[in-house]
Length: 236
Image (cartoon, rainbow, N blue to C red):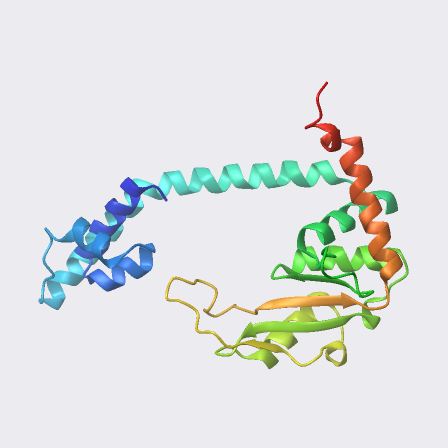
């Protein structure tokens, strides 16, 4: 949301009875910024008056943005449908390319100071991406039941509930899950992934797959070569 829109929304929230800390938290801005935007609007101690202003503010917001939201939703649906139409039936070759790119973007890769230990590991919060990656592994003979799954989640959340959710999302038994990794640091107040529906990250690992790692590395090198990216910086 652009700053003018944030400022407008801050005024609306203030008119509906919101305090400066509440406005700052909801809009994701500093309290000092929120205060500068709404300092000309004092809070009303009259609850009835505040409620009337809140309803008026909501009506004004709906009138201003209602048609825009409908139009945006329609445009999104149209573009999603266009994207879905591009895919069609995936071949094993195409799935291999997609799986390799997923790993190279989200996986644990070899470093100059750390050789690959034979594991192929991907960590992500999106079950769709992990389902695609697991399907890629299955297509080359790695069953989902032999993979290792580990939830990584903040200690204030419920690891058991998260494991149950992930097991359902990926259609794997809970017996395949290792003990969850708890993130001990305290998340800041600006984080938005701590509410209901937060299930942490899932780490998916295929062990003893060094040859698979090398194959993926080769796929990425060849995609790089065929797209011309490998020689883009060379003089012509």
